[in-house]
Image (cartoon, rainbow, N blue to C red; front, side, top):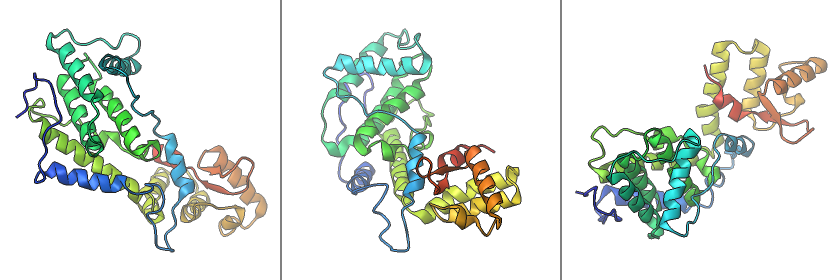
Length: 292
């Protein structure tokens, strides 16, 4: 059992611990050459890079900076809170033990632990910060922002932008954080699930069935598009890159085809592969952000 008022150190994790197994699985994923390509070795499965590249517009963020001192790390966490709530942020709750616990958390972040503990350290820091609850508001947002920065340095932003942070870093602590290792293990499992999902996103069949089809069903249910426009979107979902000719089965007339492509571009449903080009792809980021 960890004494929460004692200086926090990296826990000793035995080989029989479930955490060790999670660490091994995470390191296997990190060891892959790329999360966004190279997983589909079957010649019949193509990586939809035109779609995946768009997902980078959903999440942005820098890696956790390489700080020279414990004090600079603590100041950076205060800055994260200020970035969330504005200039009035960055001040701790007026409780005697909070400044000491935050300095100690910053010290733990500053210490260079073996790289195999990178994922666990991220989960551990996330849970520890939630337990300290240093700020009057938005502690979950700060904890997620800090975790995002730590993971960006581990797996890189292209992978990180595919994460659902509300799932991987949930605030599901009903017992006020009294079992930090158990809670850290839960968060570590969430990180593993999201990394596994990132590998699946490299497969076109997965992107179609799990992302595109539900998004198009949402549009169809809301009757945002007419029947022919809907048919054109389904054609576009069958191939990552398409031109006017691929839509000839929907609009036989060339003039109508060109007019409808311009309308789909104006509505943000498709985007050109290059400026002024006549090859297009579905605007996946726009479709995924579309709400019922």
